[in-house]
Image (cartoon, rainbow, N blue to C red):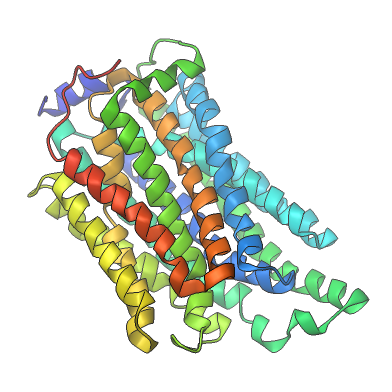
Length: 428
């Protein structure tokens, strides 16, 4: 494996940075991480407004993460056609449009329209993520890619720590004051319209910020000198799945995102339980940042740890730690149950960037294609939470933690299998 920055650029063959481009990429990680984490706050809000079951409420995550499956390969094709920076602008503008769609969803008071707005928002995030992951890998030598991407993901976690706390104050504050189940007819419609406006105002503010960021990225679009990959049919990217390591890593992205999102989605309702911390919705929402904040701290620490130990071994150890925490949380009560669940975020920290880089070692000019295929696997965030919600409806939230625990078991196995470097000639 090459070990110099020059060699890294030769291997990726996709782009060259000027030094001042890195902050823009870190800003992208901050924004799409923060907005994604707001789903954990919007979900209980919509569940309350529309009196949904756990499984029905998880459709928030299904609509959002389905966009990764639908839009990842078109996003990779867009990168090949117009380049990384222009694709980032397209993604940011699509995110802006998704935020603005919350207005008609509120005006009609329809759950389905909120799901549509979330899908459009996620389509833009998908494009931004397909752009951002390979760009970070091009910042330096291949052997430090896991560390570098982990550091970038720390900015993602900074967003996921800040956004839920602010969102819980803005969005969840009024749930405890009125029970929608006691309303009907015109009173219920008026309540839904009034309360959904709180969500709209939050996302309008995000729309303005996203439009500003898009303008800044457009202004700096020439700061990245790009060497385009050869034009190939979009579906040829799937032949990368003929590489066992890449295929297993792609599956683990599905499992990881599914497990992480499922846990984040149940935190508010989990902490509200009398057998856990018996909190109000707003209080529980303010604890969501501990989950994502743990990931932020872990990513800054992980950026250093991954320079000392084999990434695969670190991945296996952290996956084992998550399985242990979930088991303890499901079999205890009170603070022990609540805080062990929140502590999962610390060990989640290095998983996405480590799985991503272990799977993508040696892709060279096909980095954007590989990123597109892997981003499709983020659809796990649409599937696993739905299964977890159905399990919660049948057996309760504690038993439902077994679903994400199984996901982390698969990740543990991948970490052990991928503990040795991949051969650079493994591509099919």
